[in-house]
Image 1 (cartoon, rainbow, N blue to C red):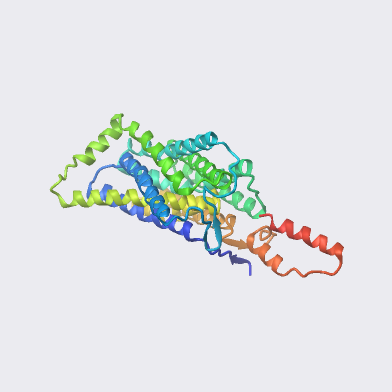
Image 2: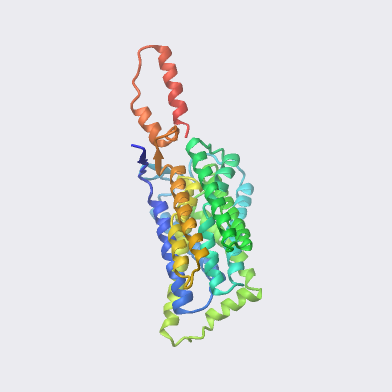
Length: 388
């Protein structure tokens, strides 16, 4: 069989991450288009960070009541090491605090860079940016793999290189097509690059804190939520965010309008969904890697690209060509991201080597030879194949 599905039992967190991401986009559309009919970019950022604090505190409260903070928990056989583990933290408290502040800073840059652009554009341009982001979002897995290679020493093997090369080619093809069809937007690409780099740095720093310093996921959620809430509050000193807040509090529909109160309810739901999304993002980064988070976030991009094209009421011939090329490339990039993360394993050209399926199959079929020299050779082979 050329392709095998590399199923792993612990796909819950990436799955929940994608689910919350999709529902959140629906709620945002209902809020801004159907109910309140106003832009809520910075308000949504603020409520997201506030709910990160609230949900993190709720979890810690109930966990402390159960008095199980010293018990090593597992999820489907995977140990989740807590902060108060007996393992000694190698870094000082000051370094950990600095890293948390840096992570919060990169999260802030990532979420506000997009808002800064879309709040100063028309509704059509804002939707176009979302479509553009879907086209180039797979660049995050390239940035993440390079950064993790040099910082976290996460190795890159043949199937990783193959996947990255195909993704790079697809991104180049998309850019050339956009330029040829005269739909290329340089300013959008610049902001997408800023947002992507910030997200990758956020994931990498948090992975380091989880893996090296054993920082508790919910505690880092609270700390980053507090820091980012403070950062976001300063933004409301400027005219754009301040106007957004006034439009929300003194909406033209009025407090006596049912749509207004439904909108306020969904506004709070959006904050809760965002916090849950970010918590599951952190679990995905901890259990898997920043590259898996990049895959989870890009897996819906073909649908967003299709939705963006369908939403264009009068597409011309060049836009049709751009859509077809971009859609095909987006499918290829998602597929290659799945190969990178070993969701799919290709059994050709040695691409299956160093994948978890290949190592499990190889080790399970090894026989213990009688000769001592063969034993040593066999042990070496196991060590090499297990290094993934």
